[in-house]
Length: 436
Ligand code: FAD
Figure 1 (cartoon, rainbow, N blue to C red):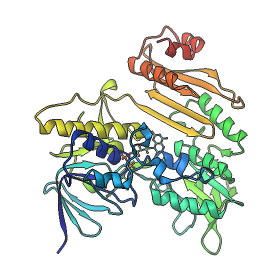
Figure 2: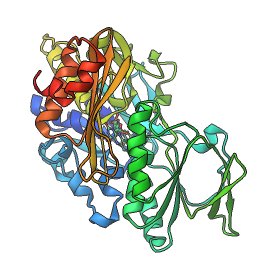
Figure 3: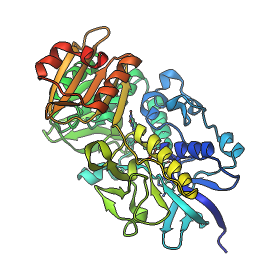
Figure 4: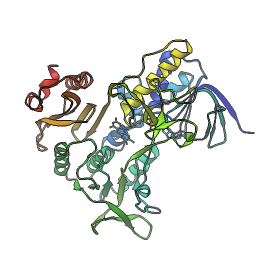
């Protein structure tokens, strides 16, 4: 007969939200055996953004221990023994393959049945495959995706194997591709980025911002091919990729291909059971879904973004951390007949590669104005962009800032001060934010 286990709280997913939810449960008070985290990955929850920044970069001799949650916020690191010490069952290498929310029952890939009183869904996102973009990739070896720890380890092995003769093609022009290109280059691979859009990060960066980053990457020796789509691959007799085929009829030599062509929320287990919106699981301002006692956190949640009066889904680490903390506080408060204020999130995301580092707060809508030193050849480039909508500053980006400057731009994005004109922002530059 199948083994059955029962918990007060079950978290599906041991990623960023799972790790930070465990931390908040510990803070709020947890009895031994009340909480289980069930995760497909074989390791304790870690700071996923560090996969492309630190953990994949063999030149810095990375260790997983350095990136366990909650390293990202500078709090106590939750090593595997932390879960044991706090009476939390961390069940790794285990995938939930069936969820029946009506009977509060989950079934894992080894047949174990898990019963819960309260469920927290923190299943994150999965990579969109090249095949989903219509690019045939079946049976081609050395095409890598990067989402989970196993993906990272497979890619690391290939990087080690080809380190003296690596010819990497990175498909996609988003954050992940940019960070991966930098890490591959730092590990002595020849790198070409190829993507169909007209400039890198085109959904977020203005063309002027991209011009800086493209210039910087080109100076580092990375080749960038824009406005061009990948159509397929050539392989050797072992099925290992040798060339990437492009829609202009040319080919690129390659022995490693990294595909960073998007992600989608991992919600398939709950199809037809939970109300969805914008591709995610719809929640209220406490991360409660349409099903009683079921919460959704991190990448999978479409929640009310109070500042903008809109329902949004956010695929960034900061929201994964904060939504997890907020949901657990709401759960614990409800048990005592209390409430917490509803979630009031200021969008924040960041990236780091080579010597560059930036942060962004708010919304990138409306008109934009850039300020500062945007020369990609500067030894210490420092510049920013304001976004202005209806006469108010709604978003601020800063490259190369100091901690107090990042704090200042966050305050501006939150307060949305009015501004006379774009010229004022352009002239005042960062001082508009720091004097605010
Ligand atoms: P995840 O951290 O993805 O965790 C989901 C977990 O659920 C995984 O462990 C998965 O195995 C598990 N799971 C899924 N389905 C099941 C199942 N059925 N059974 C059991 N377990 C399951 N954000 C930023 O803000 N800045 C960055 O610089 C940045 N860089 C990134 C770099 C990379 C390489 C990646 C992949 C993401 C990056 N992000 C970044 C995004 C950020 O990491 C995510 O937004 C964040 O991890 C979301 O947290 P989550 O807990 O919702 O999901």
